[in-house]
Image 1 (tube, rainbow, N blue to C red):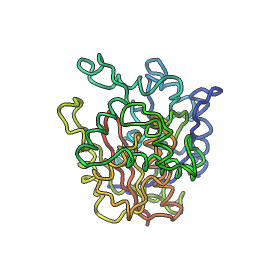
Image 2 (image 1 turned 90 degrees about the horizontal axis):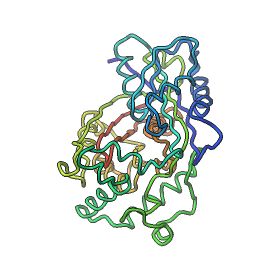
Image 3 (image 1 turned 120 degrees about the vertical axis):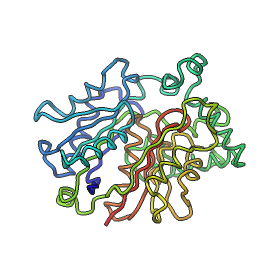
Image 4 (image 1 turned 120 degrees about the horizontal axis):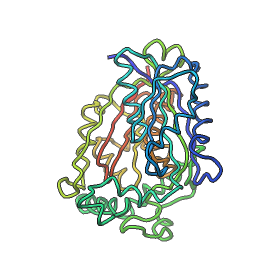
Length: 353
């Protein structure tokens, strides 16, 4: 296996961008990531993106995003209709073939152009679930109740996660929801219920933006980055689509992915979890075998601070990589999810050297 490391990361997010379209949102973030990588754009071997045509409102709308990369020089390009983290997985696999030594990955969306909580119902079973049209928050609430019933977790436990996310959000410059004084009592009394037991503060804030990462192999990574964040474990697994054929109180696919990625092979300094709802963080800590007393969990605030659909998962890898490159961590895990109720899960272990 070739050593592949993250050498550059850039991101942006706002609550609602009424001025720029998707291409205009991507361009400056793309330029920043390429500049930080110090690899000339013409020398980057592969480009892969992640986006969601449903948000744009038309088929093959992702092609417009390629305009942000530019027509010159010609590129090898691919796309996944998923979070950009799966685009990174594809790029990592491509580098393993030896065909290329570097890759540019980006994920983007304008969540404010519609109602993501209602829109993403279309990813569920078209015969048994879609006709009922449960929103993302409705489905997440079902899972939250199942988890709370099994473990004894309370609404206060969820509020503590949400409050910490808002406080941690103060540490990043792209937070959409951040409050240095956030606390569980205030959220329990002041944040309205959306889908019982989930309150507005327990649910991700709709965000517009983009995330870009540059990865490179072996000596190319070492040449362009003083301390690359090396990908040491990478796996993704999926649970059944039907809610009635899996235990909603657990995340079996995340546990399996963590095992295959060798999360437990060493201590973890940082964990960035793609928890779009507060209870999901508690579930993922359990599923991945993380000890929150020894590992910093979502120090960026996670998706509860900013959640660009199709980019927030890629953010998790970028945030762990940033901490390693800056010397603030030596080993960390990034988790990314797709589908309702944590149906599909990707786990990426990164290390410094």
